[in-house]
Amino acid sequence: MKLFSWLNDLKTPSLEISEDSAEPEPSISPVLEKRLGELNQIKVTDVMISRALITALDADVQLRRVRRLKSAKVTFFPVYKGDLDHILGWVSKQKVLELLHENAEDNPVANHVRPVGVVNEEATAADLADIFLKAASPFLVVKNSHGTTTGIVTLSEFVEMIFGFELSPTAAASAAEPVPRSSGYEI
Image 1 (spheres, rainbow, N blue to C red):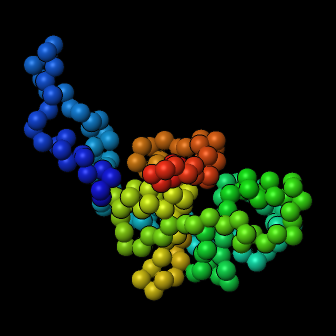
Image 2: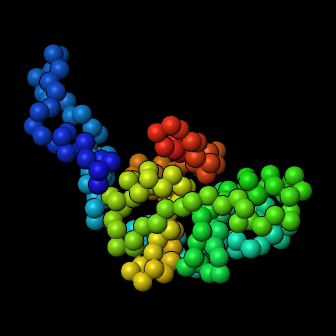
Image 3: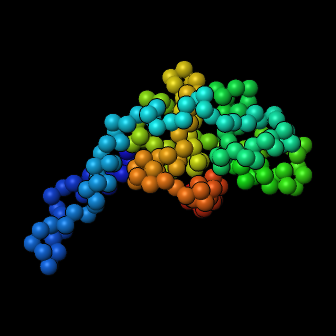
């Protein structure tokens, strides 16, 4: 896991010694260090939302047919063509509501799809950080070795798994809209 590789440097005996104390002070929380060490044992399939529970939109559906999703509790939707094995990307609930408000109801959902990342179901939770950074999407599609979609892993679940706290609804909504930067995307 490249993103957290700097932690290996902190595990060396070169701990900082403050002038006030004779004991070395660790540079990272022992709880966080332990949790990050456990990520190599956690499979992606242990933290994913299974295929049967995914709320998704067909790419060919016109927006007027998705009005019922106003009450959905998710902030983004996978968009697929044909079936869930062919997920094209994602669209935020906010974007769908904006388009419905603008009376753009005859537009197909496919016109507003953003790219999504993919992860193999054999990957570990330790691999997810790098994949989330590269994908710049609020979830990753989990695929098996045959290319079949087995579920999705959300960024908010990943953050909760590492740090032990849940992202607020406003943080989840902002994560659904990555901000373009010169060096990539900021989530």
